[in-house]
Image 1 (cartoon, rainbow, N blue to C red):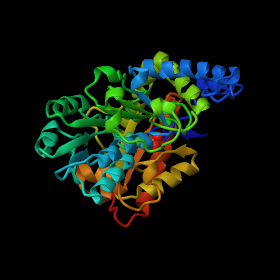
Image 2 (image 1 turned 45 degrees about the horizontal axis):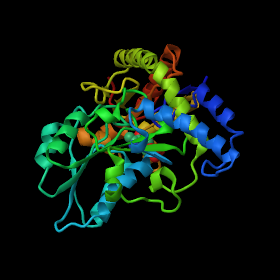
Image 3 (image 1 turned 90 degrees about the vertical axis):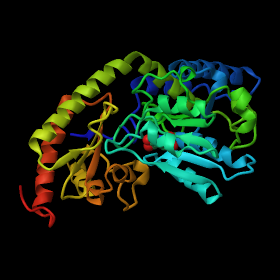
Length: 389
Ligand SMILES: Cc1ncc(COP(=O)(O)O)c(C=O)c1O
């Protein structure tokens, strides 16, 4: 039995996406070519782009197709380095951002920017007052993620967006984990820009989206990362990833029909999973439980043992989970997200993320709890930290 519970890291391809990829394969033309082969590819591409635009409620002119959300985040943050300031520019990000924002912001800091990491409360949420108190007259950018990738907590991005607008500060949202979980209409939201990743919503890797409100007006304030051809309104050069865009479009069409159903099913499974874990495994903490969370995410600390050992033993039973962000794998540092809400290294080291998706069933949840019980009991029996019930 194989149970995949790492959907926040990446999702399997949706059957409609696989079909869209296969259907697109004969359209090998370069969409910029003037001949029929190119025109055919371009036409097919347009319909996929329309599906993406409809799904995210954003006009095509405000969309830049990128290779991933990391690229989208980098474009926005690094654009602030190319502006002229007669003061030391200040930026605010939350302390629980994904490395795609965190590391880029630190890069800006190493280039003279003043960086503030907004702390979160013990439920893993950045409070609006915290942001208010951090704003200075030199603040040029605020970047806060919509949904945290490790614990699933939903951040008050609409409120922060309104505050930023009032103060005339650019507001960027990493919306990667919200996409496919929360209905999004960018044109109606108080965000100046946002990033999306297709591989978190049942499309393949290598395709992302950057939304910029009123892009035509703002284009001169932003700096492309890739110069060259005229693609993406002349802002992001490189022949389009046509198959990736077709796949992304198909994922958007599929999710627009089934998002609600997936949501209800994932919530039921996640709640059942957490109920059983709470009843059957002692000494656990469900991280972020008291706040609004993405319904498919459950992050649990198992006290007295190491998350990595749990992960590896569950893997032997065919269960895929993760400790923190996939992008932080390979580092022995404790999760910066759990540290931000508890400042407790042991809690951070013993936490596991279970992220459910459209293909999961109650049987997957039950199998996982059964194996988890065995695993946790075994690891505690050999843990020098565990002194019994
Ligand atoms: C919140 C968040 N932002 C950004 C990223 C990076 O996305 P990509 O893999 O498309 O660069 C991820 C991926 O885990 C994420 O969860």
